[in-house]
Length: 313
Length: 99
Image (cartoon, rainbow over all chains, first blue to last red):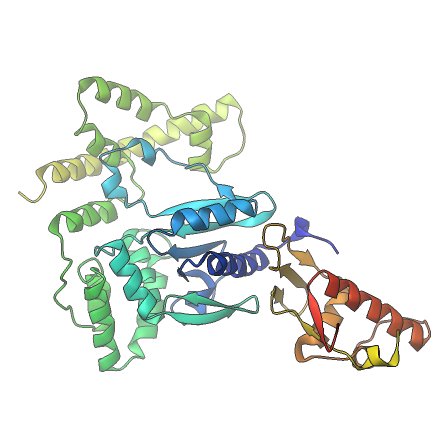
C-alpha cells in the first residue's frame, strides 16, 4: 500500500490527533486537544481546515509525551524567532508550547504546557479544563478535548492576544454567535470558569461582548495583567520586546544585544519572512525591509518599554 | 479457503485510526505506534474497507462491492479473502471467530 508520500494536511492532522491520544493513553498522561477540529466539532470555531495539532498536556507530562513522540520519529522544531535569547522579556511573550515536526508528516504537533491568558497556575488551569472536558471522534478514534467553555476561552484568548491579526474579528464574531445561543445560566457558568482559570480580566472584552458577567477572579495578578496588555498591544511588533530586554541588561550585554537585533542570522531572517531564496541580494532586501518595519514600530516599542519599566507604579 | 472461512465476519481493528473523505481512505495502525506510517488505500481496498465498518463476510463484500474483475467469482472471493488475511496479519482488521 502507498504510504506517507502524498498524505494531505487534513488527513495528517486527523491521524496525528489519534496518534497523540494513543501515545498519551499508553503513557498514562492526561491531555486535552484544543482549537482545530475539536473546537470545530464543539461549535467554537469556524469549520476551516487546520494545519497543525494543538494539544494541552498536564503539568509533569511534557517530558513523557515528548519522549513518546520522539520514539515515533517526531522531533522538536528549532525555534524560528529569537525569543529564547530574551531572558527578561520572555515573560511578556508568554511562551506556551513545544513544536514537533516529522519529516514524513505535513503537519506540526504543538504541545502546550499552558495557554497564554490563563493567569491561574498551570495545574489549576489544566484541572479546570479536565473537569469540563469533552470527547470528540477524530479519525474514528475518541479523543479527549477541552469542553465548550474551555475551547471558547482558548479561542477567544488566542484571538485577543493578536488583536490586529486577520482572523481575530471573524473568530471572535463566530464565537460570540455560538455563545449567544447559551442561556443566562450557561453564560454565568462560562464566567465562573473564566474566573476559576484566571482569565476574567484577560477575557474581559469578550465576556462583555457576549453579555457574560465578570466574576471576581481569585488569580487576578496586576503584574501578569500588565504583561498581557503590553503583549497584546504589541503583537507582531517584536521591537518592543528587544527594548524591554535592553532595559534589563548591563552595558556590555546591551551592546551585544543591539548588534544581535540589528543583524539577524540569514536563516532566522528567511524563516521570519518565509522566503526560501538564499541569494545574498534578497537577504539584504529582507534585512532592509525588517529595519523599515522596526523604524515604523519604534515609537510604539519605546512606549511599551517605558510602560514595562514603570510597572504598576 | 473453506466454507467456514466464508462465515467469518470481518471488522476494522479498534487500534486503527482512519480518515475517509468519501474519495480517499488513509489508515494509521496504532498497534505499534513507533513504526506506524499512514497508509493510503487504493480504490478497491478503500471499497472493501468501507464495507467492514458494520462487519461483513467475504461473500457480503464480493456481493456488495464492484471489484471490476472479469475473473470467476470463486477467484474473486479467494483474492478478497487473501487480502483480508494480509490486513489481519498487519493488525488492521480482525474476524469474529478467527483463530
